[in-house]
Length: 70
Image (cartoon, rainbow, N blue to C red; front, top):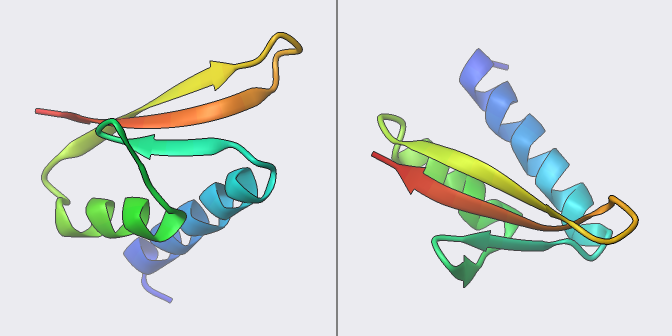
């Protein structure tokens, strides 16, 4: 498997695990699926996305936000 493919597969697996645990995933202010996030990264290779982790009172991730950085 080419390196980029592996990177995107790893990202998809990671985000799917968050989704299965009930973590909200949001990109540019809108709910997004792991597939949508990975596709955005694949299409906009020259653009970077910043992750913002939101934690609950116990310190567990409750939301994951992606913002485009230009």
